[in-house]
Length: 410
Image 1 (cartoon, helix red, strand yellow):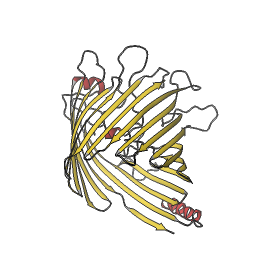
Image 2 (cartoon, rainbow, N blue to C red):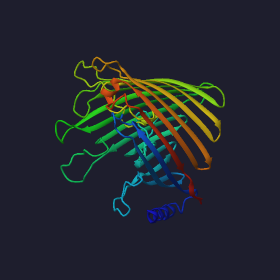
Image 3 (cartoon, rainbow, N blue to C red):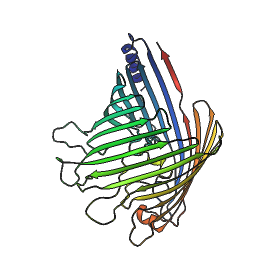
Image 4 (cartoon, rainbow, N blue to C red):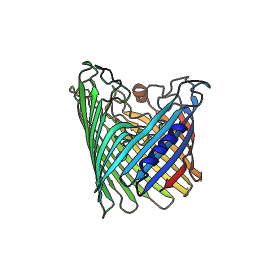
């Protein structure tokens, strides 16, 4: 991998040899996280033993820039300690990013290749950086960014093999993606608004290889930050058809208010609603959260949203503390409910508490630790499995080392 990166660096330097302003940088990341999982992700059943493991990401990112061109290649190796044998030939090296961005002046650009798609608060399209692998898409992005206005057009197309007659059913989960995003940031007030239209084409799971079903997600994201407040709201509606060809009609809404009390303390409250199937009519009414960074919104234990046919409600409150520029902490509380009743059971799914501590002991080094627990209900057992009478908790420690190891300008 070092030889490949060195060769790429020489190529990029040669490309920019005649330009006026060239920059070349090499960034490294080693992120190691140890976890004690006693019910995170999937609630554990009675008598089920906890799991403890260490996952790791090693990433090298090479970036070249000049006035009208930028290229980036990011290679990563991910996995668990001990997952592969000492002398195994199985590699887990993947390309996290590999793209080129061409700028045409007056704010216009084209970006093509494997890239991260992160928009607004990562609700629908996000990087999912908490996951050891992260999210990426192979896509073409065209856009305009100037004077507080941003417009992006995105086209993605996937195929699992180059053989005639094959129809995509691979790991990305969609055959084609098209989207338009508009964002406006006021230059005179702390106000921003975005609109997203996303069209997703997926293989028809019921009617064979030659047919696709399209689902549309339409919505807006609004942020207002007057003085010490941070007010955020979002709304999305889904229509079209799901992967089985069933008509889709679902929606979600969120609202969150944060307040900075002083340089140390901050508080926030919020509410999320994702619609669910109510058993009436012939439409799917469960909202599909698609490719968002769900860890950021629905509790650190990552129970939700997943594929919840009953929908989800999340009542949340949090406290943040910044003891110094190098030490901060947060405490979050979530009360989860389904949007629709599950039989004769109560809607309540349970209470989750998340605690996280972040320390920066030196430049480019961050140490984080967290502890979470869930007090579930009988409804939680039906929706997500496990046994709510068994204690569900999760603890982790993460070391992130992310230096820039090389930079030159010529």
